[in-house]
Image (tube, rainbow, N blue to C red; front, side, top):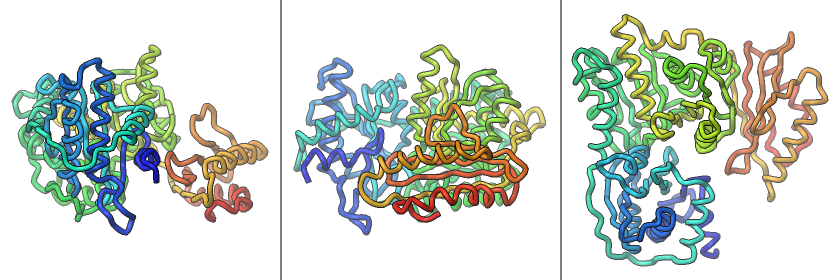
Length: 502
């Protein structure tokens, strides 16, 4: 395999990800060599972007709890130092804190590198890059990887990274926000009287309960899996995972807590569980944070990904008076759309994906799970002082009676062209049947709604962002409705022999 192909294969949208430990998934392709070389190329890219010499650059490097975190962090340090940059080693931190390191006055880094692979298996790892403008774009990652391929650095190199306590600065930043927003009589302890438990999934966000919540007066007894462990022995650190959500639901109920919070491995995604045991992730999480935003920014736009429910749209538009823009999957797509709307003069305060990636304009459009939870907890504290509950904010949110996702696998070469043809054919199939109503505007795949005596619901067929798969999401407002929808669309899929069976 040529170097160019080897390095470009590590690109996963706007991130770098690969196998960091040889396992049943394959040979390691993201080793110290690749991390060192990519970090060196990033330093060169950052010098060109900022107009600073490499010697004047300040670059921070942090990592989550993965097994290969230390070795890849050291390699990245060597790579950046090889260009002459000043490197600051931030240790075990969250991804959002590494972005904030470019903004906080205590650090003011020109750029930062986070060693993480989010919720992926323990043998994986990756690199995320930030400047004060946010995470790098896909084309910027491609340019860095192409440069890396042309200048591979083998063998360990001298490196003089300086330890930097970013976590203390980040926690102080969030605590000050909470003190000001709650504005309690006991200003230093605005969370006194609240019981909040955390599930960090053995990832990097285990600091949230002891260093923020407890420090502000909350009772966090009953929190689980706060200790970092790259083997992830408790559950997959992913708020979309049913076992993970059941773990925090159980912890919340058993502790009789007012709220439970859960993060993914690197802390950029979150979900919560309400005191009654109701899980607030995906559509419900979007509704909850939107209700809080609506109080401060009425009539603003909320950008979400493409798989959100009709009930969420009805709640945002009808109950909250917001404008819901259902866009594309991919957290960068959603966030970039929010930034684009603001640049065009349309107020967008929230861009959030059902995966739990949520970014607020007031927080630099950084997808920060801790910041989402901060907003929710602050509002909960104020509501409790009024004798109300946070669940009151979403009391009018409807839920689909049934929901399902089916992921078709596309066999053979040229999967993207094949998938695009399937989408074109599906749109024609839907247009020919008066029971199918093609939804417009629609920014990803083909979305069809149904509203007749047999069924009320919708289906969205789309291409996966990176894999040879076609996810199909379906929802129905009545029990048994999915069987009706599947019965209507099954004949379409029978003629596509390269798709796995429905």
